[in-house]
Image (cartoon, rainbow over all chains, first blue to last red; front, side, top):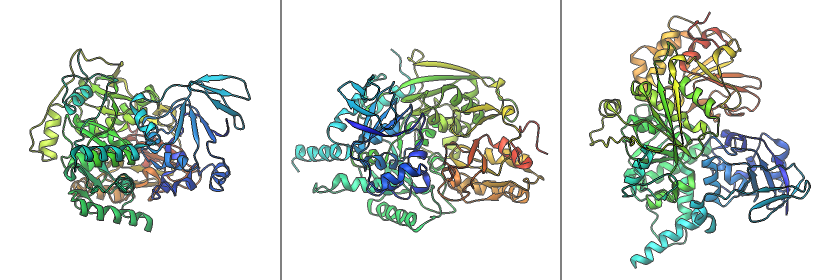
Amino acid sequence: MAKVVFKVGDDVSTDIIYPGRFMATVLPTETPQFAFIDYPEFNAKVKNKEFPPQSIIVAGKNFGCGSSREQAASCLKGPDFVVVARNFSRIFLQNAINLGLKMVICPTIEANEGDELEFSADLVINKNSGKSFAIEALPKARQVIIDAGGLIPFTRKLLLDTKSRRGI
Amino acid sequence: MGMTMVEKILAKATNQAAVKAGDVLEPMVDMAMSHENGALVINQFSEIYKDTGLDAKVWDPDKIAIIFDHRVPAESSKTAGNQKKIRDFVAKQGIAKFHDIRGDSGGICHQILPEFGYILPGKVVVGTDSHTTSHGALGAFSFGIGATEMAAVWALGRVLNVEVPGTIKVVCQGKFKRHVAPKDLILHLVGKLTAEGANFKVIEFHGQTIEQMSTSGRLVICNMTVEAGATAGIVPPDGETIRYLQEEAGVKDKLDIIAPDPDAVYDQVITINVSKLEPQIACPHTVDNVKPIKDVAGIKINQIVIGSCTNGRLDDLAIAAKILKGKKVARQTRMLIFPASTRIYLQALKKGYITTFMEAGAVVMNSGCGPCLGIHQGALADGDVALATTNRNFKGRMGNPNAEVYLCSPAVAAASAISGVITDPRKGGK
């Protein structure tokens, strides 16, 4: 069980999550300081590490639309947020899977800041409203990457397996 | 069962007779493009190889292109450092398709790739930029990916676990009215589909309007398919594609001209009659907030921008020059013009467009992404309103969350520069 610490609406673009003016910062260890920086109150709490791991961001539809910038996923992965959205934009979804950011697709989610959410295999349960909402599975094709803990370990293993098969 | 354009391309890229939407494949990549975010790709590429004892060499340096465009020349020492890191990597790996900050071969990645013949029909193209959808204009399956995904491509030469996307067929009929352009068509379509209407899907363009459209116009419509969430936009290659590649891009290779099957299966078919289309404006703060120009005409504009991977090509500059010839940019309005590549800049110079722009009071900047994504050049003040031929109007996009950005065609931008307010080019400025 974890708490909703931030709620945003539909079509939240990567320019809102991680504005272009900070794109010269690329390293995943350095990006969280700029997460949602145009929302100063939330950003200050991220910077001060006030949120416990697995804190929840709730969003509407098309979260992460726009640019392919991976900083938008890495800045949320650093503080270990879970993003629960009605759905995600394609490139953001793939970047998040590749980096191991936790996402839950929940097409009917209703929750407010401060609500406690609990996750089962196929449901999000809002402990405050008592309502539960169906979870939609992440793309099956990408499950192997999620299971491997992200695309870097997955690709590393592929390369090493190829090497051992060739007996180099 | 027939195949769509993208199904055909992916069948070929995976050596299969047929594939269908929903299949999971690992297509080989023909072109892998990055810009300054190559610095992050390099970081992730090194991470993949860390402690493996393997030699961190890219799979094929001839199939990688890196183009500096987002921050040219560097706006900060940090960016300069990223660019330096990329230059060192490019030299070490032997990547020849590298476009540094130069006046003879620079520009925006989505203009450089077609212009230099790096994109061929039927190929699989990936880029660490969402507007990689542009290159579907030449009949390639071209889509945006993130930096870590690109690092895996550099290592393996293929994209892992790609689900073959379903396709929306868009059939366009009729002729554009005067001062109505491909930009108005794509804004209209994004408004109709909404920002998520084509998420995980391909938009395949057909019809008489598309057949008669130049490659430049096709680049505009494919470029902005991502604003409806599309994985890719694509135009079946034809005589115009061959002309562009041979005459303008200097391509000598044999071209693979494929067409979708007549019985291809589409998720949806949309028909648009462009002869009824008015100039369209995308209003703040989403690209799908599209209105006909009459609904927003008269709004005061502080900054006009012509340029970007969407509308910074020679025909865009030509129409703007025609409208601005002998006129002045309104006193309270700034006008910035960014030719999409240095080749286009030189052509515009020879045709006298640059003189026209400067005499009108516009500032002509170097080729690059410019203020489109708010990194440097042309940032907005609090309360400023911009009208731009770029592709995004998200809150904060042009460097300030307390400003507004409207999107339009080059003709609308030029006419509005003269009057200082959003102006229908068919009615003219002051």
